[in-house]
Length: 505
Ligand SMILES: Nc1ncnc2c1ncn2[C@@H]1O[C@H](COP(=O)(O)OP(=O)(O)OP(=O)(O)O)[C@@H](O)[C@H]1O
Ligand SMILES: [Mg+2]
Image (cartoon, rainbow, N blue to C red):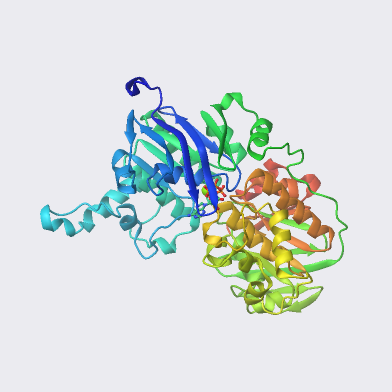
């Protein structure tokens, strides 16, 4: 075929890639038209990130061909890919934490004050100026001298996006770029994408968020279990068609909230305050209830949860369990009171990546994270297998190191660990972030079951459909304050957004 007439900026043909024991990609093809957003869809572990890492030169293919702008790419490596104009924003961000924003953005290609040997000396003044210009252009209010570690996950993600844009790439791969950013920041990103498209850049976009897919996609490709399923213009898809292609079955009830008997108050917080972070937060959560904490990222929801779980101290206010005031000075105290939390930053706080899935889910490990927590399941193996089945963790063998699982499957392992405990209160911070639609409904089903069994659940979520679909009651926060509490029957997208942005009902 005459490559110069190809209507595609990128063609990946019959790509096959295996890892020891796993055929991650089995003859997958992907064709991307210039100046379009191509959304790559598939369940956790389908092979999306692997396909993109093949393109960005991180993985060597077993077989298959890649054509970029009509030229065959061979012996791909990351540097060559970048030089050709292919940039990738990774799902698992790896910004160098001790670097400043500017250093991170210019990492590996710092402008220098001179040529030759002097190339080794970075012209710091100009990288700070350049970075400031970039940030201004994107409307991001961060100081280029800030350390990456001092930024929120959302901010780190935005900086990675800035970095790719700054490389003037002609193809940008975004692997779940919005999993940790606010709606406002998502709008900012989408504006950027529109601009990039207008300037002839093609984007490959990976997301599990249905609303984003239909908002942004020109074309869609679906893969399942490492195999190509279908591809076409976004207009040829409906949500149901897409879900059934990804999951390989119909999902009839996306939010399987079941009725649970609502009992006595289990946890109460009264006027809880952490100065400068949140103020006067009061609420009660009852047995059998799913209590939603809504708000924009940065509203202080996670911070409230951290105090309840003993990770941070409160400056004033009270926490009561079953009507009795309790002191929760550390997580051990929280766990003794039957309170557990699945954190937002699961990867750093929740997993030992070099250990097996089994060890990560298992009793021994749980005991390490949560001394004294009583488990009423028989054997570790049985328990781990059960969770693997329930949450559809895609791994051929539970002895595999957690670090080699796909992003979403790693998250399921952390959640699995906590769902097994004998608890009173379970706090879930963004429980389905990065989780595919099928597994999402499994996690929701589990939450419902746990509520039916008498657990009190606090669910922090930035996804309105999830808040509306799963919560019995919703407390909305804005800039560290509670702006309103709404019952399930009164909750609507508009009401929550009004309160979340500081308005009144
Ligand atoms: N470095 C690796 N070593 C071994 N197995 C791997 C490695 N990278 C990926 N895999 C396996 O390849 C398969 C595809 O993983 P991949 O990360 O591409 O999935 P994904 O579609 O991106 O999923 P998610 O939506 O969860 O991010 C999985 O079974 C995963 O465990
Ligand atoms: Mg992935």
